[in-house]
Image 1: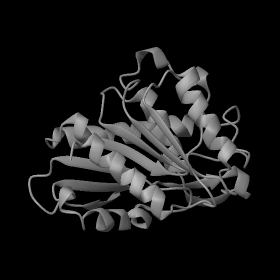
Image 2: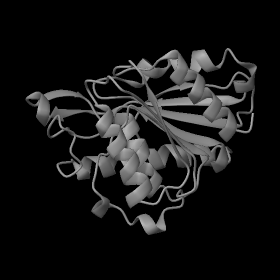
Image 3: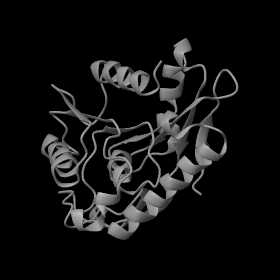
Length: 226
C-alpha cells in the first residue's frame, strides 16, 4: 500500500475517516492542513485523516519529468479518451485498500469519505464506480474525468446513490471548468450517479476558497450526521 500522512482523531476511538488524495506533483503532506483546519471544530474530535502519497512516475505531457502522480497525464487537454487507464486502475486499487484498512480498524463504511484535489479528485470520482462497498461520500475539488465509460461496469456500482460533492472554480487554468462539467455529466448521465452536487465558484483558479470550504464542511457534516 502507498505510504500516507496520518492524523489521529483527537478522541479515541475514531468513528469517522476522511481519506484525501493529493494532486499531481504534490504529496499527502500538502493536504495535511485540512486535518488541522477541521479539528478546530469539536465535531471532528472522533475523525481520523489519511493523506496518501502517490508514487513518482514519468509524466508524458510534461516531457517525461518524474513527479508524484496517481496516473500518467498523456496530454494537458485531460481528454478521457486519451487516458492512462492502467495507471488509473492501479490507483483505484490503492483507494480500495485504504478504505478496507479503515473498515478493518472498526470504522463503519458509511462513516468513510474518499476525496481529493485535481488528479486526486479524478481518481476519487472514478472510485464511485469501482469500490466494492458503499461508503459515506465522495469529494472532488477541481476534479475531472480520467477514463472512459467503457472502463467501468457501472451497473454493478455500490455507490450510485452515495453523496458526491464536486467544487470547481470558473477561472481554473489547469483543469478548466468545462472539464469539471464534463466529469459531472459523465458520472451522472452516463454512469448513473443520482446524488451529485456540483458547485461553481466565481473567480476561483486551481485552488480552494473560503466559500468552497464552508460548503465542503457542511457536506462532510451531513454525511457523518454531525
